[in-house]
Image (cartoon, rainbow, N blue to C red):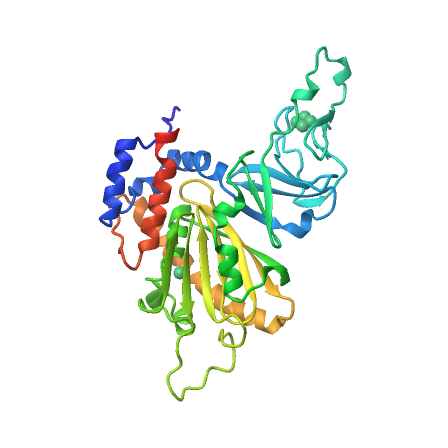
Length: 380
Ligand code: FES
Ligand SMILES: [Fe+2]
């Protein structure tokens, strides 16, 4: 079986960009074609920062965290000199994953297969029987470098050895998080929620980028937050998009609910939802300090895997967390139905393009433009 690599030539990209300005979506074939997914992993996922876990897990010398970024294994480790190193978690011998555990602490990165031993700096320190090999090029067989950085308690990795700094991709997310009333340095990790979606990863992100569907598809969410067009704010930036949802005004004389999640009982006055391109969500719900963060990654054209790590302020009660999770899980379950139905519709081939509402879905248009630029072969 031979595959032609997916590429968007500059002229084609210019024509698609004009279509986008008119509200025509990217070609829907890009949501089902395996060659597009391969191109997205090569051109986008291999060069962007990905949230992988908790900075606290790589605080001490020898502590490591492993992750798969769109199927590409990576290991982040704290070196003896204090630096945070990242490597492709792929043995230079025959390609095994060097480290299999999700996290832990080790003196070396020794491969579990034939025990080639790498230092915390990635250099090959020794390979059994290598002395019997004539001209064994030990110095050339270090682990391939990747990158790691932290923001507050959050750990990020990048498969690229020399990427743009994390700060460029996050842009003003840290400032807007602080501005929302959440001090990330005072957050405590509670749990990770993993999920699978039977849809293309872009369908999941696009669903997250608009609240046009909220009044119709999320009655619970729209009861707490004001999802009307005039109140709910959509902001597009070069590397991300974010949404600000104020609490719905209570009508005069109506007492707020006293049971369950209300969002009205803390220092965080509004919901704030960030999509850092290409695939990272950061959610802040109103109420007490809370933040969830995580990626959605492609598992082929029709399937995605995501997770969210939930953090809460140190004083937030378990009851409040349970109540907020009921609210959050309801929204998540509603969204799953939406995105999976979109994938079935796209998969049918009945349409070549969708239609974007350029006001209410302007973040989708901006995001698709960002993707188009990344897939354009002009700088390949
Ligand atoms: S594959 Fe790692 S030591 Fe052989
Ligand atoms: Fe939704």
